[in-house]
Image (cartoon, rainbow over all chains, first blue to last red; front, side, top):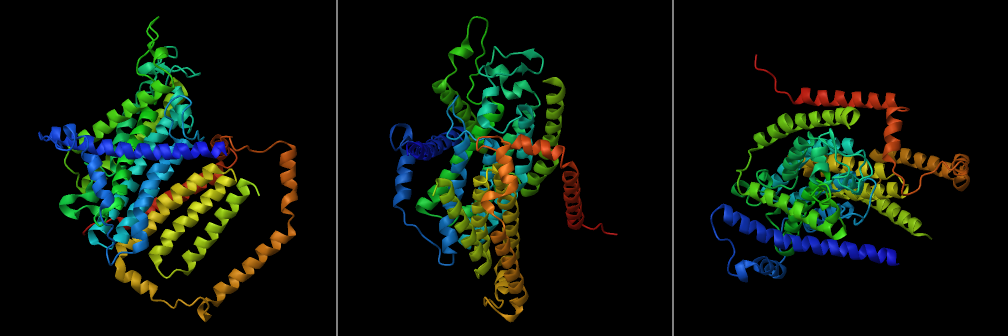
Length: 356
Length: 182
């Protein structure tokens, strides 16, 4: 029974974490946008407005749940749950620190890729269930965008898998630091197995993965429907896209899913390209910085720092770049990112065969 | 009953019940969403059979790809067209459905027949595999095995399939291309 109890506790913990992260994320988003647009952002509720999102959540909790008269009630009510659960299930396979992962799956990476594609179905369900032109248009735009951008993202991921030779996220993480049992070399020439740190991260073990990382990052922005790829919820044309009709907790679940998705795609990016839970500090001679800063607690710290940096970049991009038009969006995907991702995959093969 | 057996019966029940709903429901869109439940239950059955790679591939291709495409077609066609489609004779048994019913009954008889004729618990190849320790354990990685087999033993079918998909792609691109104005 203890075996199952452990998994229940982990699942509840992850749910609590995604809730807290959404609270923090919304507050950070508002402060970052305020800074970029030279405003102050929330200031009234609590010191520096830190309680603003808590107040927002309380408001959402006591709001009335409205189901439009013409909506398909079942689909309308189930959609936010499916959108959120699809993202939440992705957290099951992600390692946080050496030896600490909710589930150490052999196929962890592939599993996450598959589970995230269910989110599209939830969005289509919300769009159809609302029975509203804006919602349907938003849902269709979102589905078209996510399906298209899955291709460059997939090939960027494959080029990492070809270097790492495994789909197990924990193994991929271990390979990028001093705990690795195989040889790691910086840029393919300098053996850094004993040094570790930033030198052994995937993007430096095989430098073409820097391009793959940029491709993955852009595609992940599109998959989480964030600006500059937010035509699914373009407020100037579609009111709010697929979640126009949602109120109260249902709306909160859609938002929770968006912020969890931001965290999840950043975390996958960190694990695949930026050394996962490994420290960025290398061993230099007798100063064993990497040895000192590796461990379970350190691992969680490094993961969170790296992921929050990436989430910060996502917010920075959202409030800096204008929205892409739909033809520009598809041009970028099919004519720029996809060929580049194919090229990365080719180079990965060559790199694995002749350089590593 | 072990945990695995209980899970098997649960998944099998969900798969069958939701598949029945898909076939019998009057609302086309709802039956597509119910098909999602069927596919997830099937993926669960694959996992119980230690075919985890197949399970995840099923989710990627059928749910992430085909189901979303079907829904896409529905949304492009609009509610009026769908309503026309649903205006068919929806009685469960009718003269138009006789051939299908016949086929289904015959097929069911064949399956029942096979089920009773084979001794499932003492299959020859199964006991041979167990005797030779040629079995998978739940923690084994199946991907490398699949990859090696695809690239050696099943290379020809694999390549033939890739050519078929290529033909489909080229055909789709040709159909959707705008004609040049002469």
